[in-house]
Amino acid sequence: MNTQTTPEGNQRSALVRFVVYGLSLRPATRRMMYLALMLILLSVIWGPIGALIALKPNTYTSEWTLILPGTGNGLAVSLESIGQASASASSPFASSSVDPVVNYKAIAASKPVLALSAQRLGMSVQAFGQPKIKLVDQTSLMEFTMKGSSPELAYAKSYALYEALQWQLDQLRDDETEHLATSGLRMIAGFNDKLEEAQQKKLAFQVKADIVSLEQFQGLITRLEDSKYQHENLVSEHRALVSRIWTLQQGLNLSEENLKSAIALRSDRAFQIQLERHAEVHTQMSSLAGIWGHDHPQLKQLHAAHHTVDEELNRRGHLITSRPELSNKELIDLGNQTAHDQVLIELLMLISEKNGLEQRIQSDAAFIANLKRRIEATTEDSVALENLSRKQQVATAVFSTALAKQDIGNADRYSSYPLIQMLAHPTLPESADSTVKKLALIGGLGATVFMITGLGLLWIRKPWLQKLLKSA
Image 1 (cartoon, rainbow, N blue to C red):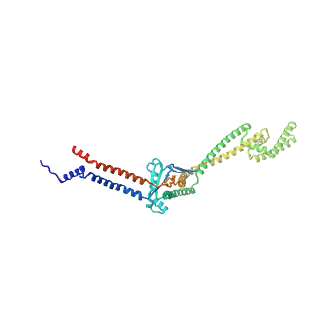
Image 2 (image 1 turned 90 degrees about the vertical axis):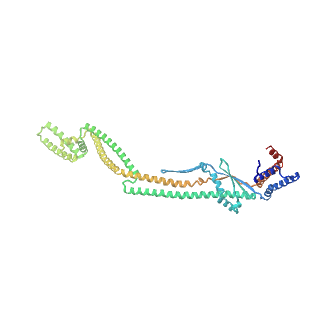
Image 3 (image 1 turned 60 degrees about the vertical axis):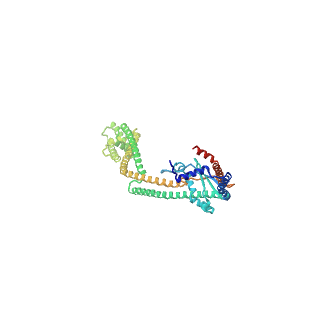
């Protein structure tokens, strides 16, 4: 059976024979060829490395560390009779979605900060370079690395970057404070308008209402209660006086009107003189009547004198008591001085006191009635005034609290952009950074090892591959 070969198969077979058997060269020629190839590969590997080591300028690295405080703070102001205003800043690390350290890393590497840093040193942004920033896990530390062509330049770049970062953060804080102040003042202006509106409504109501304050209405109620209490005390005192007067009157068997008449008659000197003359004439008449009889001329004279005295007693008694219905006998009985005169005086004083209490009770009763009518008439006004006062108080509390909060809220500029502190100051490098050169040498050595290993495998491949081909 004839087999046909294709051009592709012939090429594959030729390649296999070349790999397995190689060129038919003498060992010395083959050795020289491998040596030349090794030299070429070594030059390819070490030529760039040597150029890098020889031509690359020395670089110096300055390292420094920043730290962000992790606690929040707060301020509070108590406004007497109004309320309390407070402003607090939570820890910048309290949120799991926003990490200020990551934000600060982006700000430190931003174009504005790098441009300002380069401007401080009088160089371009490209010449200034990019800082290397490392965030330490589970901490608020930021490790900075800055390179320069000299130790002094690396040191100066570090401080320039730090100052530019601080300046940028201050600008952000100022911008935030300005925006918050502007919006806060607009809000406070709205609160102030509401407060003025509430005050105007209250003043307009007070002008036309009978009461101007809740304290005035409360004072009316308090005065009503005090007046009622005083009125009850007066009524109780009046009852006690009436009881005392009744007891004394029962002992004297005198009415109040007769008591007044008796006191008036006994206090009148002219009536008492006539009463004494009446007693003397009456005594003389009794004595003579028992001796001479009723028809004796002297007794008749005494009767005439007695009649005159009776008329004078009657006239004087009616004048003093203003009671013409009293007879002479009643006037004499009421006007006679007795052992009960002191009791009569006491009784008269009690009656006078009772009359005074009655007038006060009537006056207080009228005052209480008028006060009740006034309270009833101003109840609706007091309710309306209370509502207006409450609205004014709420508006005042809101305005005062917002104003105080605006002031104390500006006291903390580091709520959104926390304060940063220099934990480790920039170092002044003592030697050049040889990291790149060391890595280049390590890479060259590794490439050389792999190259020699590869050439060695090519050198010894023929026996191994021929044996494998025959066994296959």
